[in-house]
Amino acid sequence: MKKASVLIESLLVFVVLLTSLFIALPFIAKTNQRERDIVLWNQKFSNIQYAYSVLKVQMEDENTNFMSSSFQRKLRQFLREKNIVTGNYKPQFLNKNIQNETYIFNKYFENENGLVLGFKWINPKCKGHELCAVMSVDINGLEKPNVWGRDIYGVNFYLEDVEPAGRGLSINTLLKDCSKKGSGVYCSAYYLNGGFIGK
Image (cartoon, rainbow, N blue to C red):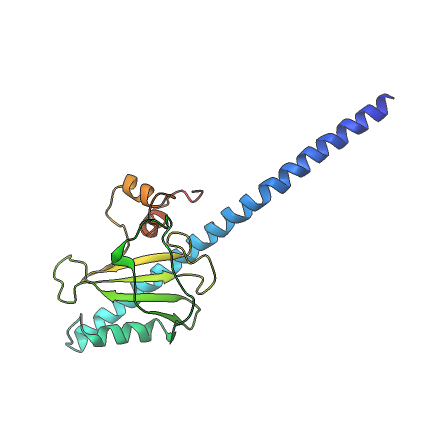
């Protein structure tokens, strides 16, 4: 009788633990995917920083106007543009009710690595630390979710540097925008600064 009671208790504990594991697995998998996405975003941003520094040197060597059409052409060559994206690619902001006009693009292109990129000039005659152009980077390409702060991140171009969208803003502003109430655009800087990914 005592052995049967112990066996039943052991089975119950096993069932509870197994149920808990099955409940937690989707959360663990989702968190691991976000961690991988953030690592990938960090790598892609580093590549863009490098490309920008190389292009700056080339443009200066050629004595070419830095913010000219040749810059955009060379940037696209360096990023290995493959084709213009057509069809059902519709990026969304984290909170679908919020729009950040600066980061809405008319055209997107796919590169050889499967990234989907958008680029637009904000101020082609920028000076100093004025925002010159912005770019979106969808790190998993045409695959869903195509949502800012999940798989889409932003890059701000200045004359002297590139920065993730949101760099220089307070941690509270980044955190608010990187929540379900925000656009997700500033997750670009938030995650590179080591922000919590469990949101």
